[in-house]
Image (cartoon, rainbow over all chains, first blue to last red; front, side):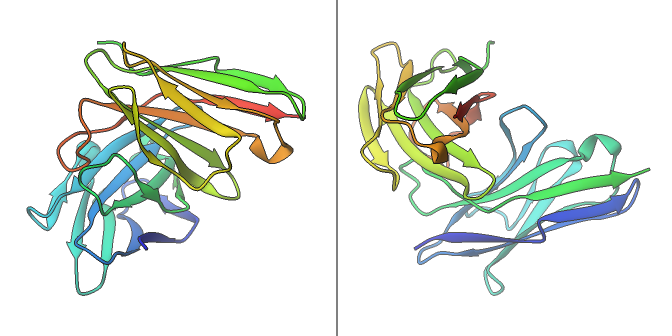
Length: 114
Length: 115
């Protein structure tokens, strides 16, 4: 069965520092992988997705993620954190490209220190 | 273009009651999915509908049901509410069913509190 593990429920970085949010997945077939962001009192917004094209995926707001099959990882990075990046981030996986069913990780709350 | 709309935004019910939540997808979107978000269990998939047909269902008891109308609007119903049903219920819409090709757009959610 597919699953997602996000390492670290809370991550704190200084403004301007590198952001690294970790995600490992388990899937019996080549997966589709996603990163979503959730701001307080809002729904989820798609940051980026991996659909078996390029392994380095660029998303919105300067975020990118690299699919590493050997490590079953899909870590999210941003070179320089902004205060506006403070939010909760979710990694998700889907094995069935014909369905809109996602399995989410538990989420990582990102705090940005001034 | 208007986003996904969910009504009501907040709801308080008591145990044993039932509740109906509504989701209006983005215009032109025919796929609607529902998720439950709780601090303990995180985000869990409830249902997926496309063209009024339920295509997938998550691992929830039969008290949770849903439907989709011909205009793609969707409702979900929870009967005999339990305290553990307190959660943020999120609806997402997309044009089609392919998670690879179509982006899911999420609504702001309905926050349900069961007392």
